[in-house]
Amino acid sequence: MAFEENAKDLTKNVASLGFDLKDLITRKKIALDFVYVGDSEIETSGEFNLEGLFIRLGYAIDSIGAKRVVLDTIEALFSKLPNQRTLRAELHRLFRWLKEKGVTAIITGERGEATLTRQGLEEYISDCVIVLDHRVSDQVSSRRLRVVKYRGSTHGTNEYPFLIDEDGISVLPVTSLGLQQAASTQRIPTGVARLDAMLGGAGYYRGSSVLISGTAGTGKTSLAAHFAEAACRRGERAIFFAFEESPNQIMRNMRSIGLDLQAWVQKGLLQFQATRPTFAGLEMHLTTMHKAINAFKPQVVIVDPLNSFVIGGNETEVKSMLMRLVDFLKMKQITDLFTSLTTSGEPLEQSEVAISSLIDTWLLLRAIEIGGERNRGLYILKSRGMAHSNQIREFLLTNHGVELRDVYVGASGVLTGSARLTQEAQEKAVLMIRDQEVDLRRIELERKRTTLEAKIAVMRAEFAVEEIASVKIIGQEKAEKAQLVQERVDMGLSRKADAKPNHHRRNSK
Image (cartoon, rainbow, N blue to C red; front, side, top):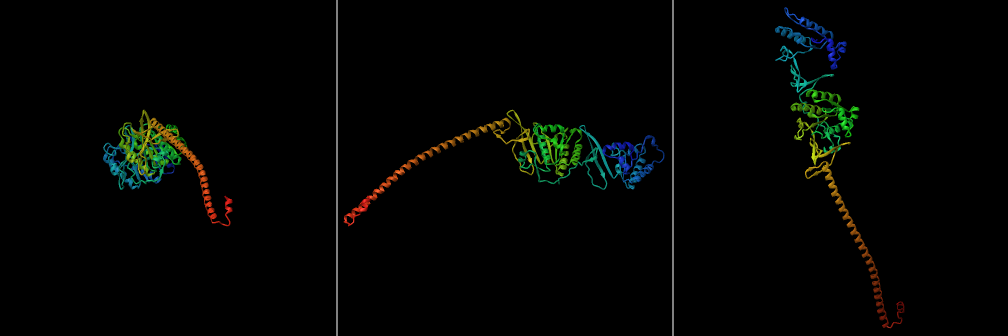
């Protein structure tokens, strides 16, 4: 029962929320009744009561067997009555009559100056009171909801943002979801193989929170795009919330480093959500992200960058919003990656929105200036639950993606750019000289070996000649000695006057 909008206007207006009242009326699921209450319709004379309204409302309830009743708004019915005593009596009577009918009734009312409602009575006789608020902060509006009381039930007492869009009304609790999320041991690649190696060889934990911070131009979005592209290659869904660049601009820029994100968008694995931070309030952004994540069901979420939300000293509100987002993603085991711009001259190991305590893995990108050059460096500030490298690595943005270089450390620290090239050239020259010295030593050793072997060969030849001569002389001496012995034998025999002298031996001489 409406007192301000007729059935035609109400049907048209709520169609923008996705409600088809014509179909519901045809199927007798809802009945619309418009009661016009103008100045000419109210004349106070005698005793005032709502008996006529009860009859009309009762007929509408019985006609479709309604279980729920909405009266919008009650001010239109009572605002013209000057007698507060009568007004209060009829309000009590109305609430009691609705309860006796066994229907759940929602009655809308305007807020009073010092009370929750215009009459200051409705909140006392109602079982549940919900206050809606539409506020503007730093030129950004947001809608909030608060349950003031709810008899017979425990309920949240904080303010809750709510979103009105083409799918109706979405309410997002402000309070944290708790710290009971599961902790996965599964690891997923970062999209950069050498970065995986720095993270214990396997990448991030699934369901963890990752922060990439650094000054402007250090490659934060490029690393985030690598992570999204790696997820799509695995057949997983990724959603990219961009708050500074349009999707087309991001996809164009990433093509310069060899990443074709548009192909994954066309396959339905990658979705971009791009809006300006000033488009809505923080809670509205949070509600919108919740809705998009629930609809797309991604395994990877990227928010680029976080510091875009920081406007006019609202860091506390931003941290509160991000805490609820991180809790929500952890509960769903979604791996989230945030980028954050670090202001030049500020401490690098500090995020502008102060969420470092919420982050599991924190990558810090640095601009390293040496010898009049500006180069990029990366190191892992922390990574919970895994062994990780403590080295600062130079990285390049090439036409085939992010390329991490080997560590080069000089007398003044890590070397990058031309200083690194100079160091490499010097090391190559030193190695070349050492190689040459080794070759010279090898040649000299070979020469000495050859000379020695030649000398040995000559000595062996000389020895062979001497050996032959010595053997000959030894043979001759043996023969002469044998002959002398024989002669002595023959002489002895001849002195004994043998009958048969040893002619054979003599002839043999």
